[in-house]
Length: 136
Image (tube, rainbow, N blue to C red):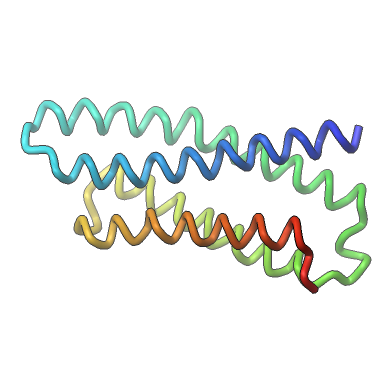
């Protein structure tokens, strides 16, 4: 059962990161559009993806991660990498919320919206590094 939840956690984590990455990229592309109808159409698709794909997959990732943490006893083994991974997870969730707000109404200019895209990539890379290497 542990292997099933590990596979579920890895696949859902990839989908969360991919969805966030794609959402932030489409936000930047949407800011370049001139037609009001095109912007409205893309925004509608973005809202649906954010609500009906990102949040459910994030829930699956969190629940499978909690199950794995309980089954492996990672917190009782006093491993420092998990605390850093959880901190990065909170930052990633914050970026997801920021991405959702950016979809609803353009809060950030294009150059800052692109920085969200880059931050999602860097933070997810660090999270994967911590989970696989477990440096401390």
